[in-house]
Length: 102
Image (cartoon, rainbow, N blue to C red; front, side, top):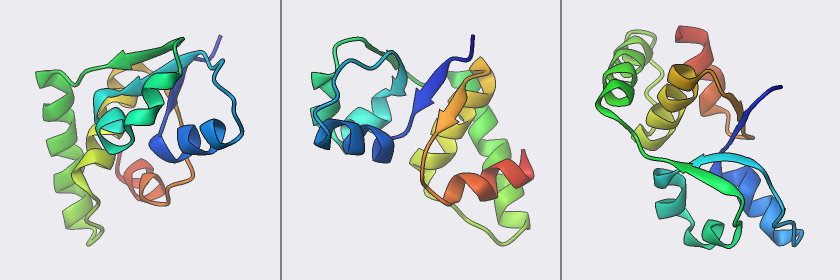
């Protein structure tokens, strides 16, 4: 079964639709961006690890080589998804750039 990592923009949309029964994952960084995410009780929160930051640095270097810098929170979120083999659900175009260099 596919496990989902929800990005902030998807969770904001779900909360606007009063959908609070969501199973899956988000990151502590997404909660910092939008604390109302904490209303979703069944959502598991992932805290970045040193391994996630190392992966994020590699992704960031690759993005800079391609001339596509991306905000740090997005890069760390992508690293978390990669390291845990989670499917990232997002509407953010930055993740297309990240996918291209990962």
